[in-house]
Length: 460
Image (cartoon, rainbow, N blue to C red):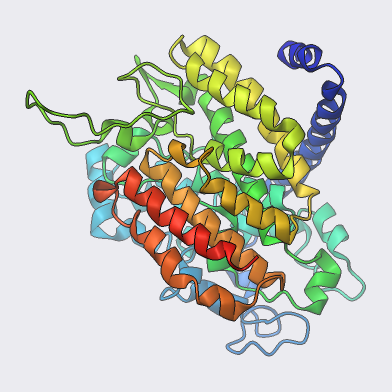
């Protein structure tokens, strides 16, 4: 806490407000940690426990309270919603078997290194639990032994179910924490895709909370859902997801067993394409790298993957302007500390991580109005932010953000679906600019993103 107190002294009166954010955030984090502990400590009952025709196993969405075909939607492998169900099966495909061979772990379907994310990790397993179910219901909703029998009982409440171990996925911070365990990483067994695993052929990890949630959603947000859990605010989900992703990344970076591997740093944390660029040895060769004003690091040093930092820079300017100066200063200080050694870098990471936690708490209590959402999209493509799109990962986050925020405005009824559809061509041009990592060109991407946002601006 010494670093936090120093920041408070430097910022004077502003520190009182910032301090309140930290205190509230730590209290919220403790509640979420307690909920996660309950969810993890129970027995996993297995998909079969949810599959009855009076529960979630119907073939038609004709339930009175919930759809009741949720299991079918989860299992439909031909759709994005079936991604979790097919997670285990892909471990037996040629690419996965080749990765297992390169890593020397044998069959990935029985390797702890893979099962932490391609199945549902469970300390206690009920009679219907099967690893082959992949990422099943309880991977996201929590071990069901405490709440399975009561969650459909007459007179029960969502709050009661949560108290018995159900994960409150309507809470953006709780959802982000669960998703990021696999979609960014955790220090639990089999939940960290390090550089060696990617070098063996595993796809690069990429994630955006609201977009991925929408793609895999298997429930309807009807009046009953909103009465029990509230209406989802996609813009809030996006902003909180970015903050929690940065917090998670910095937390993992600071762990001695994960931040380094032998004499090398863990390259998972660095921007892939800062090293994986084509090399030219001609005398008149011009480096492919272009200057990034957000990274004060020496030439030739690989930069930390700052995709979530960049998105938060756009969000904090609009949704938490009183924290913007502190946040921007800490991001630059973190990049600079990377050139000084692991000790200073971890210290700087911890300071930035605390601010990311405060932003997550602030965003979780923000409504993200129509005007704010448009301003965030414009900020992403602004002269203040766009020069930081020098690498592929950050650019992917940018176009997903614009797509997510515009879709959120449609969902909230603040922009018509027809108007948003008319802009799809411009958004698709921005997607096309990041369709292939090896052909990515920063300046072309910035032009495509700017064009999409300028067109979206007309909706205001």
